[in-house]
Length: 325
Image (cartoon, rainbow, N blue to C red; front, side, top):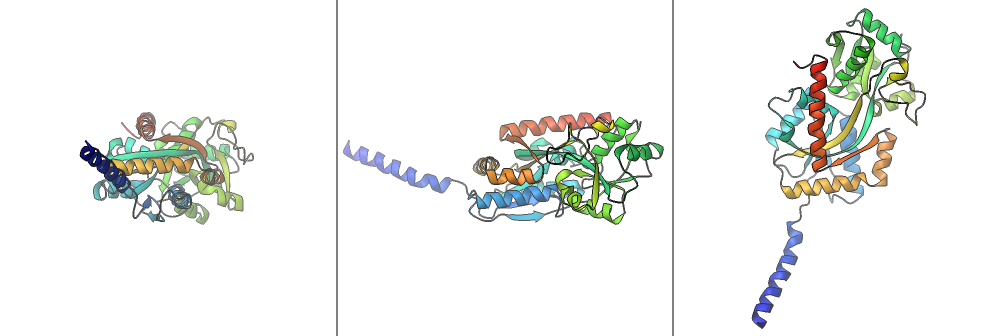
């Protein structure tokens, strides 16, 4: 009996010593921002990298990689085809990601092609013009669009059919434009490049999210003529909504992360827990608040459920406005 007891105790001790070795810890954590510096995806990765490390949730500093192209398609293909089992990798995501999947732009991809880690914020879209633009308000802009849809060039950081494209289409539809596909849209690889196009005069209007334009708005380089929100932002009460100007269009963009579907269960659990703990921190919430991003939390199974419902909703909307048949 003593011999059996000693053997049992030895086994228990060995298991206790071994269990920490089985716990996953990323060795070379990396976050891919599927666009150039300066846009919303870039913000997601950089804020996540900073807070995870400063909060001690990752032992190693996270590398941020900007991988632009195809409105997120280049990064999505890179992750799903070349790094599908990478345990150290996470990727910035938003409504634009689910919009691509809804519209079949990511060839052969479905909601199950990646593992949805979390959503942790949402912000509303805006339409902005240069400070010296001829358009003083949304009505003047929509009047010009109705007179000649091709006379006004809209720019965004997503590809044709993406959320930056959908936002002005929603407003134009409310204005009475029968075929919103006539709207002239110039696709850039990220919000930063779209802003450069606006300030250079290459386009007349930028469609983006408030976080992408805030600095330029506060500096006076651009004017936001409409925010696609139910009501004015508390911190920016001088920005009018599209709704109060007679165009009942709402455009909310969620922010979050996904990772390779083929990663290990231990890695998925680690990242889901780490991201959840990060979002609960005061420091991260301050980063979101600074960008006027409202809390919008879904983790694990809830994140997957939300992503799939969002894809269905966008697919239905895309059919309604003629992007999908």
